[in-house]
Structures are given as C-alpha cells and as structure tokens.
Length: 214
Image (cartoon, rainbow, N blue to C red; front, side):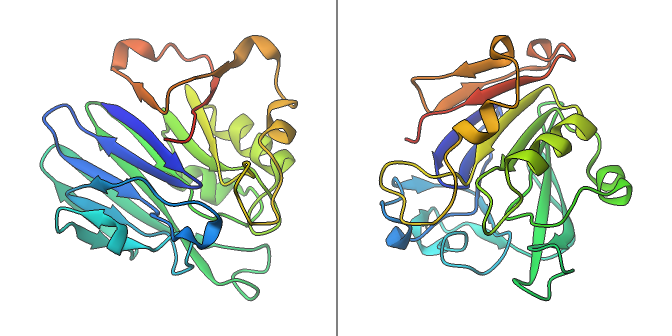
C-alpha cells in the first residue's frame, strides 16, 4: 500500500490493486491549497472547513462520514464515533475515527480527535499498524496527549498530522513539540510526501515518520 501526505490532516491511501481513499480534504482557508487528487472514496471526520472539502477530490468519489462499516474493492473501512473535545462534544462536536484494512495493514486516521485517552476508545481502534494522529493541540489533542495515545496503541508507524507549518493560518503547535517526546533514533523525517509499505516492513517497533507536505 501507499500513503501520501497531502498536508494538514489529509492523506491519500492507495491499495496495491489501485483502490484509493482520501482522508479529510481541506479548504485553502488553512493557508495553502490542497494538491489536485482523485480517489474512489473520501472520508470526512467532521464538517469543519479544514476537513470536509470533498469538492477538492476528483474521480466522483463516494463520501463516507458516518459511524458504520464499509467495503471497497480490496479495502475494508470501519468508522468509529469519538469527540472533538474533552467535554464529550459539547465544545466542538463529534469526530469520526476511520480504520482502514488494506494489503493486510491496519491504518487508523484519528481525524480531529480531542478527547482524552480511554481504555474503551483504545480497545475500539485496535489493532493499528499505522497511526495518523493530530499533534498540534488547540482544536485537537496536544503533543503530550498524542504521545499517550501512541504509548497505549503501540503502532508500528506513527505519522503526525494537524500541526503548524510555514503557511498554516491555524493557531496550533509545530510538529517539534511532539517529536521531542521521543528518542531521536526512532524518528524518521522524509524529504518525500509518500511512504510505501508491505507487511514485511512492520517489525513491532514504533517508528515516528514525518512526511513532507506534497
């Protein structure tokens, strides 16, 4: 499978036979334009402008945004309800976590998760090989809470998202606040915006992979 980081919280996941899903496409209101992309499906964690710009995804994709289980050729998707804040949605509403199973790899996109780490939520999302996790705080969990999720979920690969970059207009932290909580030897910063994985690349040791925005 291939994972492409398109900026902010947006990724394109492509299964080996070609089925593709784009997660949380964003509006240029974040401070930069989303790259041109097409997909078979789009997942939307919640209806905020920086996560629901489905019009930016070509290919006439099916839009998935509610709690349920879904199937595409070669891809199984489970959508799990969670909260965008620590007050059970009273501040910013609900958030949908998406679990993808493709090429024998379990990928979890946490969307704009804002609630504290709980045994019930961890049990719901497990198992996870690749964790796509917000780390910027303010509107989501912050770096320290993200670290707690990583420690509890114990994925093979962690890809941080929803952090401040050069052109970003949102009041969120840079990825550095998250990275400094880990040993340097487990952090990999890529010059590229994509990562190709197979089951053989997963060895049970957690790696933090920072992808460049495409």
